[in-house]
Image (cartoon, rainbow, N blue to C red; front, side, top):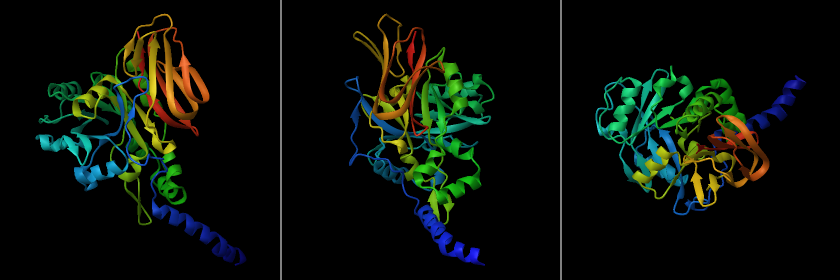
Length: 372
């Protein structure tokens, strides 16, 4: 009885306070600027760093593009690639893919996600019907025929690498996949007893299998690397929603380095791999650079450059990372601790990319520079 009274007196208030914190469902603590400021891309005059969301289905959210745009504006998002799941019998009109252009100052790129075995091919910049149940290569060709780009989502779940060999980009990280890979009960109790940042950190998992497949593919081809969102979960935790669109807009973004925030230059940046992903709950990223230079020659992420004497690879972070690692075809070749820069003189050809970490979690993930 004494133990019971002790628990009721001392333990219950603590649990109640934790539950109240869970009910409030606050946003991540990302330090956004007072207003959206588009940064110039370091080392590349004329290019800007635009923050956005890849792979966003909105039909199940109960919101329209205007409502999503208002949330994106509050999160200082510049663009959104739509990707509602296309079911058999759908995808037969352009309206199934969303409305292209600016809605409430946010650039929307229409698109849809097509199931292929256990994964998906996402078509972006779609405006014409696509027949359902096409074979993977035929689907990608149909996307390309109307000027679109094809993204292979979660490549480790495809039956064969041949199913996505013709894709323009690979979604190596998916928030939705990271969520579904975890125990629902554990997620629920984490949402109750942990703050938003700690809860979201459980979704910040390095996608080892997808990265291995990506590194294998980029050893012989140029393929853009992306991080996607997928559908928000909106898990009900004691009357509060966790895993909401406002929270996830501040969790992870894909950055495209483009000359302007308009359809053509944004699509070109995606196609060329002029991009990187950042987990912004670990620290807001306004600009980041990874490039090769030798004399007057400069090549940014996604570009090719020849291996010549004096060639250097360099990365510049907006703030210190606990650890920066550089990979060549998936093998680590250089690293730095508590640093904002890393420089390396490559000795052999390959696809070189950057990963930066904070508190043991992935913070920034770059596209490669290709040295041939």
